[in-house]
Image 1 (spheres, rainbow, N blue to C red):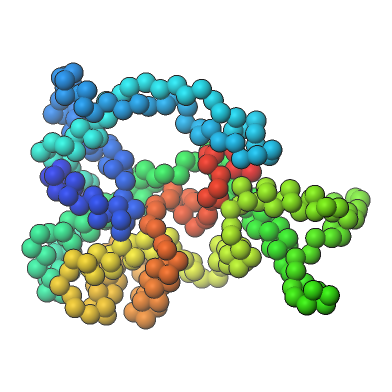
Image 2: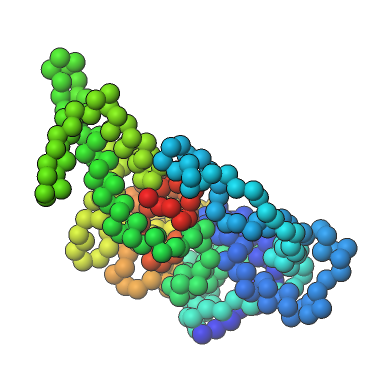
Length: 337
């Protein structure tokens, strides 16, 4: 284990890069920033200074949203109760102090310096070196399950991701699989009849006026949140199909691969994409176990291009949930279905 002292102005300078390319959030280093505050300001700060950093903090975390008949009672708007508190992180980020970052890899600094040297990268502003060091610290927290993310875990999170969501995907697939209509001369969704069999009794419904499929469509729009049949089928295949051997996709690997490549593309002196990809892969060797990601240059190039095409936005997830998706249309962290 080793520690690295980072000037706060330097971290603040790099925050836009870290946020754009690596899904950074200031709260990821909240403990380090709070330690600086407690050490440097044991008696607090003056009221005049504090007034510039006061923020309203709600008592209730659950967002009040009315998404319709399914969840009116769950999301009925609640009175907002807030209190004014000192935003310690923002205050400390405006100071000239330093934070101490702890890393598990004792030799990460030497390895980073050697990596830059091997590729002839001078990095005079140390943008690349310091950014990659911070990313290594973020990944270290992720592995230890100590990393702040914007995803809140509840007792329903894993059951939703591992059991309920794949069933929702199958239902969405059923509802959106089309059949050719000779009269219309095109493929159409099949709305009726619908047969339900619970093992004891079987019934067939005409689904008159599409009452049942409309309800299911609305429900899945909220709690599943996929946009197309192709998207649902891809998720079933990539996330829930039985995997043999190495995982088909590693979310943390993809995030760091994407961010490192674009960091080098924007800030390094490397002229060719091939060099940028090779250095990206060599950096990933410092963080990930051998065999946990694809080291082929062509495959890496294709993977990055795919992420760009999909409009990829880097976001860290809790390690237990990193391989799964949530519904983008459900703002609740408690009611996932």
